[in-house]
Image (cartoon, rainbow, N blue to C red):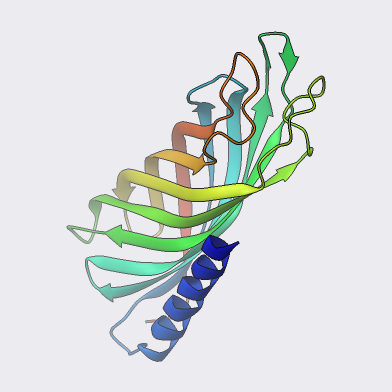
Length: 187
């Protein structure tokens, strides 16, 4: 719970700082996108599909900060006799992006807390409880222009050993592809 409070506080500070630092030379935008991926490691999940929504403020032409959220749905699979349930991830985090040029290659990450939602049990035939969430990270590298971002990402929620059952570790993570559309909010 302490990490959740710290994440919410960080998001609030970033939002307040971004809102008060606006000038006519800064670009502000809402980014809306989608992603798909394969679960890694794949003990209890097989694939993922999600949507992303974020706010970004270009502090300098090559450096953006903001806040990010969305929803990623992970599809459960059978493993070691367990029928693993699907799980959803709702992240709340800070967005950090570096753009070496106005158009072309970029990289960055989202950092925060990932809330796990869905069935309360890890598997339909298990009594192990699903964790509530954990530290969230989503590094990405890709191509951008004024309107679009296309990227490769790794998304992970660190839950420690919570949710582990005999013969499998409980993991919520994927490596995948995605795109985002930039909606300008003014200059």
